[in-house]
Amino acid sequence: MFCEGEYLGCPRGVDDLRSINDRLNARVIDQLNESQELVMINSFARETNEYQFKNCLQERISDISSWRWVFEDLSKRIEEAIEALKYEHNALRVVVERLTNEIEDRSRDASKPGALCPMQDSVEKNILEEYNFLREEKKNFEKIIAELDKQMKCLERTKKRIQEDILKKQEAITVENSCANVDFSSVLRNSGDGKKKRKRFSSLARWENRCVSLKRLGLQALTNAVVTRQQVRGARVHLSITAQSHASKVDAAIRRRLHANTSKLEELCWQREEAIKDMNSLNEELIMTEKSLVETMEQERLVAARLADRKLRPPGELTKDDVDRKLKDELGRLRHFMKHLRSNLDRISTLQNHLSDSVARMDCYAEDISLVVRLDQDRMNLRLGEEVKCESQTSTATAPSSYRRRDSPHSIPEVSLTAIMEEDENDYPFND
Image 1 (tube, rainbow, N blue to C red):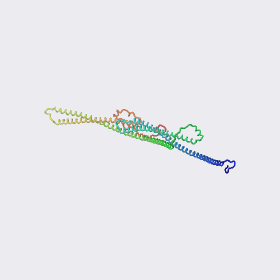
Image 2: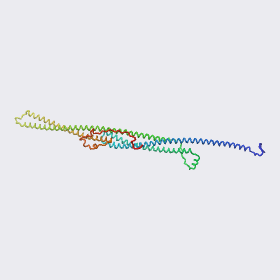
Image 3: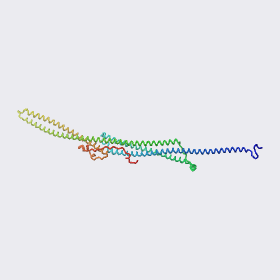
Image 4: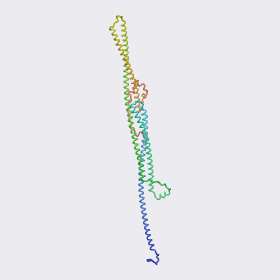
């Protein structure tokens, strides 16, 4: 009935139950060991993950901060470039205003281009060249001002994009810093918020490419601004040097022509005086020749009367003697001499007419030269900023008769060329 090894009062199957209990106990112990091992592994993994997370987060914050610093520096440099371009823009407006004044006051009113049209020489050509040069430079600088406006608008747009990206990066750094300080209590406080719209994430490579592209765009805009400013400064220096060259060329040409014309005017004055002396001499000679002709004609009538008287002799006394031959020879000589005197009178009259024409032509030439001299004197005085004398503006109708001494080189005021200095940055009426 009872199995071997069994004792009185012990139920059947206790050993099986004990072995089952032992196995269960062993499994419990194994389970406890595994659970403790899992807890330890989880704690170590959590600490490791937290360390790696914070390292990655710091690296990410460092990357964002680096790009933010780059963009802040780039934005500052772009702001300085915009201020520099604004300065150049104001400077160009002052240059255009000065060119307008040069065209109106110095070139158009003072130099009077085309005043002697249609006559033209090297002086008039130089004046027209200066006038056209100033007009072309004014148009060029107006175009440069328009280009500067476009350049500044482009820089403003680039600066706005960079500043927007700086704000985004600042916000991202704030979010990353708050993410590092997130704990369980803050998670519980924020768990009651409503559902947030799921945002679309982009890859890190795309983010870096966008930052690099924005940096390249800013550097390109900054480079264009620097190049534009150098070109504007070069254009201003070129204008200063070229305008000075044209002004010196025009002043020198006017002074040379003024000196040459005054010399010609004095030469014409001397020639007119000599011609008048010759006319006076011819008048005296004409008077003497007419007197001689009158005396010769009286002598001819006297000789003719003597011959007529000798013909009144009686018929027997009419002979051809030496007296008749002498009277006839004298009469022929007187008639021949009268013929030469009349020819001499004709030549004297012809010379007087030629001298009168020559004096009239000299008067015309002197009038023209006097007009050019007065015009050049007014040009020089106006170009040097001096007042024009009233007598140079009077009518020139009586100038040829007396050849006014104010047209002589001794009355020409001594003028000196004023060099156009290179423009100073402090001359522009605006703040830096």
